[in-house]
Structure formats: structure tokens, C-alpha cells
Image (tube, rainbow, N blue to C red; front, top):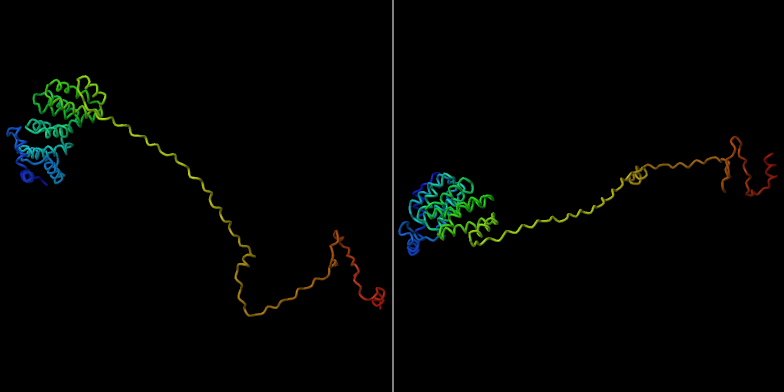
Length: 321
């Protein structure tokens, strides 16, 4: 969906005008001598309006964004220009080296220092961090005649210095020229960039500051993150597996014992008397005789020791008769 620039600018102005203060507008417009108009809105309200506009148009591309910001800038209203600068800062990743002339135009106009700083560090700096060839443009701006652009060049070096560990000599090429000027605003811009660059180029920054007599509030070095030592892993004690239960082998006897008794059929079963075995000649009582009898010879039967009531001679005669 295309964006109606005139409509969006009108809605934005109405929103900021509703929260404006005439006293604030008069105080802030005095240094510019009427070169730029002020509505008198608070900076927090301007930031909220810029965030709402960006959220309402998330699909805004590079061409649409730069064209809309150009429309806001041409209004010569500080609050509208500030909204445009915030959009460029938030979506600086969309900017390309081809947008440098537009950024240089904005930086050369009458704007407050806060707006210039935002354009320099976030918009111009984002382009320089991704394209090393922009360093020569920063050097050209830093050695030029316009004080605003010279200051912006120093501030724009912050992002590329953090992104490249070998970029500090490129900054030195034009930072020394800025320090040679008596402009205190330029010195402050160089010092601010040195303090930021110390996170990556600490030794070089310290040497540069000492050589040029600069007092830089360097950030404390970040302590090395403690190396996490993994705790010794304790091998779990091996638990002996439970002994396997022996398989139960069911024997016929167990089967018989385990099997339920068969129900009675009603028929009586006659029990046969056990057959008596004939005497084998072995003694009925007492210990067995040692040794086996000789094969083929009958075993002599011992006379019964028990008395029968008759003498032996009488039994013999009776048997003979």
C-alpha cells in the first residue's frame, strides 16, 4: 500500500501541535533566528510519534522512507525534521552509499545538536560501518569548511570503529585535523568517539589521547567471562539385576498333585487283592546271607526253628504212612 506523504505529515503535525507549548517553542527557536520553526512539543512526544509512524508502516522500504523524510525535512519544522531523523536512525540498515548526498544536505541545515548527533551516529555511521569506502567521505567532510558536517564526521566514525578492529588509523587521519581546530564542539566530538572506540581499540586510544593531551573517560574493561567448569560426572552405581526366577518344571507327580481330582462317576471300583508271591527260599526274617547262591544249585531250606508241638520223629512216621 502506497503512503500518502501529505496526509501523514498533516496528521503528524496535528498530533504534535496538540501537545505543544508556546513557551517551549519560543525558547528553543531563539538560537536559530527564525531559520527553523518550533511547535513546542516535548522530545518524548516526538519520539513516541516517530515510533508510532514506524509501527504503522513496517513495510516501508528505502526509497519510500528517504522520500518521506525529504518531505518532512522540507517543512522546516523542527519536530517534523526530528521525526524524520529518528526514522532514518531506526532503519539505518536500509541506507546505502548513494544516500550520502541526502544525509550531507540534512547535516548542513539548521538543526539542533541532538538531531545532528542522531543523524551522524545512527544513519551516516550505519552506512560507514557496512561500506569501508565511506571512510574517504568522512575524511572529506571532516576536512571541509562546514562545522556541522565536520562534527558529524567525527561522530559517524563510532559504528565503523566498533565493527572493524583495524579501522583506527583511518580515524586518526582526520581526527588530528579536527583537534588542530580551536572549536570546542569538534574536540568534544572527537573525545566522544575515542571513548566509544576504546571498547575495541583501547591501547590505540590511550596512546592517541596521551599524544594529543586529551583526557578521555574510558570505560572499564570488560572482565573475561568465567569459564564454566562442568561438574565431574559421577557414574551411577551399577545395580545388579534381579536374579531370574528359575523356570518351574512341572513333573508328572506335580501334575498329578496340581491337577484337580476327577469327579466320581458313581461306579464302585473293585480292588483286587495283591497276589502273593511264592516263597523264593529266602529267609523271611533276619539279615540276608552274605554272598549270592551258586547258580544251578537249589537253596537248602533251613528247618523251622519254631516248635510245632510234635517231635520230629513223629512227623516223619506220619509222613511215611
